[in-house]
Image 1 (cartoon, each protein chain N blue to C red):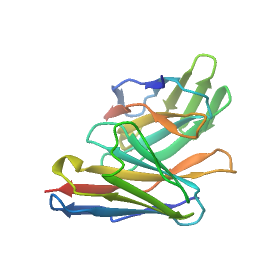
Image 2 (image 1 turned 90 degrees about the vertical axis):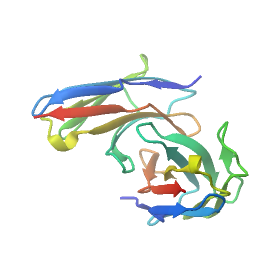
Image 3 (image 1 turned 180 degrees about the vertical axis):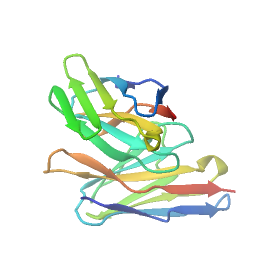
Length: 109
Length: 117
């Protein structure tokens, strides 16, 4: 079956670095997405990986290993506004997104 | 960038009535749109895949006669919740798939919060 696993909740300190891991199993693979979702709002796109390696975009970076079915989202210089849920989603061969349950990130001052 | 709108953004209705939610891609054509629902503190749950000009494909456990989906044009898909019940109260989100660009990506509407009393 298709499955996405990511931690339920993480806590980090303002200014620090946090890594949110995600493992996936899908029927076919058309890329791995990370979304940020604040409470009561729709998800917003953060990153996309389809090839192995690290994609850097400002304070956020995303890594993919297709052979391991593994990705992580790295957030640097954490700000209070980064407190949100981070959703990992893998796109299968039918272009459907298979969603993880989301990781709630709590930033403490 | 691609923009997807939803209308209404929130709606309160009485039990037994029907509610229609519209999803529009404003600056691109979307042959495929997706409808999700999300309960508090849970992830998105795919309800159905909507393809322009054809019947929607529903996920297992989603009642197609209760959640009517119509994808009449390349920029509009509608979800109608028929005979709504309080347990249908949820956050409904649509997304539109862009293809032909890198990456093939889903752009999300802002969501519609439905409360059934």
